[in-house]
Length: 405
Image 1: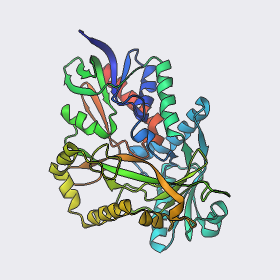
Image 2 (image 1 turned 60 degrees about the horizontal axis):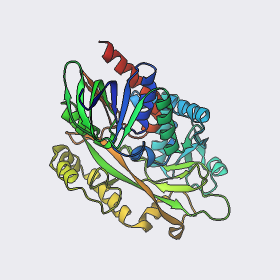
Image 3 (image 1 turned 60 degrees about the vertical axis):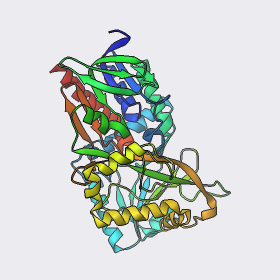
């Protein structure tokens, strides 16, 4: 090709899944390229999260996330230990403060048992406080396999492992219009023209747009939700929490609520919330992308979602909490005592690439769409990082089968 390169597999997106997939495919194919529009891997969702390695009780049994999360937890821990990535098993608690929340927590326990979460159990308040003296609640779900990881170090390590295995990474290469034929896909990426036998879309926040361009997944669109965090200033004495302490979540939404998480560096962070964002990279409260917002509000699924009064109330509450630090901290204080507004400072926010259907429903599980020469990974949100290694191997098998057919 003129000014171009030919590859067996092209992966669009250098987040945790794209990097894990490059590593998984490197043993099967010789020429693999990862195209990333940023200057380094994991600069969006993969490097802007809380570093939580989920135990596996949140995904609904029978979903792909449920199938992969427990194995992903184990495999990620093994990878971290083997490759010097900072990781700790600290355990997870989900607290219940009343009878209604106790029912939610019991449902999570049942899901965890169905998903094969090791050691999951309900514990009374006094047992909870032996582990976490500042945690509130009459009863709590305890999952001892919950962990924390340095997510940025994890993504970079996976990228380095993939490169050592033979994959090529091209940073500062934004993918443009893709043309698919019976034998290959061809597209511009930065200054290059790329040709590959197969394309895997791991583009995260922009995965739906690439899928739509190639004629699939048009019944879905990504609605961005900003997750904001605060860090608790380090002070003398023990940290407020040593593990992860969550409230009982709202079963109507795929969000987990404001929680407290111990960090690898020895600190504690609070969050995230789930604020409708005014752009796919609108990390600031007042960031606004005209094109993103126009497309979002012109799409019928957005308006169908907003017809639900519970959605409108929740969105209004999230926006109010985002604009008022006092309200944010007060909500966290319902989970753990001892939090003071003067002790918190803003922490880096992230954007959740939440998939929604044209019927106005938020999609909980991963969605995979394909054409003859491409596979599109949609809605790989939490616990996407936890699932990343076995999910990458699952996708690699699908790619292998597609290439053999």
